[in-house]
Image (cartoon, rainbow, N blue to C red; front, side, top):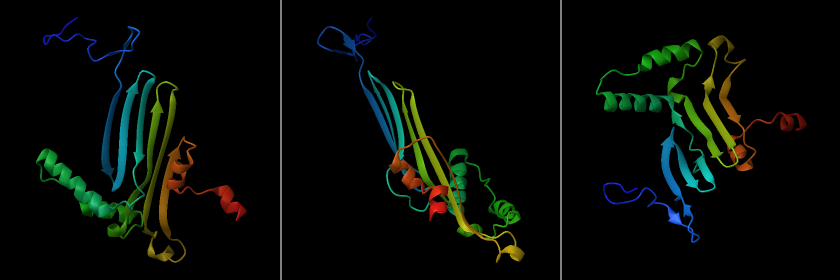
Length: 179
């Protein structure tokens, strides 16, 4: 069947030499930065199936300070809506203060790992996400000498790829107990 330009619906497909029509392969890629972490995402579709990959392209750069994130969010709100309303730094400071986080300016959020891989042919799904928040977290002056948290991390993963796991810097209970 031809469209208005005279092209048939299978004109993008190729002939494999035997007369069989083979669908074209497709690939799309994007490089982006999220929380100061460079990522690469690739979509690839071939006759054998589709693959999707999201992976960091460099070593972690230390993430972003909470103040930088807040400034970026407020900038996006202004650019997309034209509104002068902002996320209030004072409101966030008050909330953090309630949790004993008094040094708002030094809190950093870092994406240690963002990994996603899916293959339709094998139904293989792998993922990893690791976030680290750093600051000297002191739950009130009366406990600050007794109890201080320097960083907090959260990770979730379903991959066994060592390169991905190494970047996450996971705590290993077995290694700690055998040391």
